[in-house]
Amino acid sequence: ILTARLTKACPLNPRQRGFMRVAGCSENLKVLQKIIQSAKNEHRPLGVVFMYIAKAFDTVSHQHILHILRQRKVDPHIIGLVNDVYENICTCIT
View 1: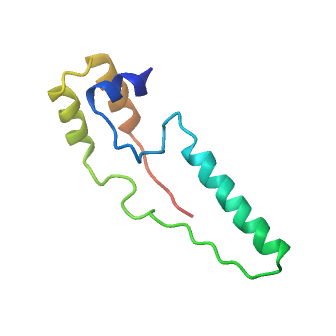
View 2: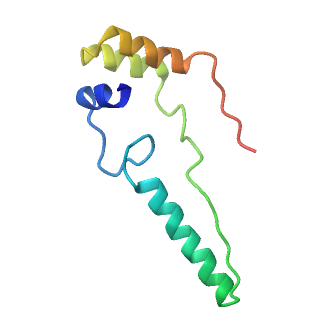
């Protein structure tokens, strides 16, 4: 419900995959599985690197996001839910 309402107010880039009801994430995982399996079957070495961690979060201030939602006249209850998601959070990458 939240995604549907936010998408109306703030359309997403068609390349967006996270938090979307599309096969993008599972499709990417299937491709990775096939690459790994192929390397195993052919006894080839394989290196896998996961990137795009830097600035994946907090590149836009939370206050700015809330401001834009208000500017686009998103329902105050939805804005409150988004605000609650941002309160007292941290990201830990190990």
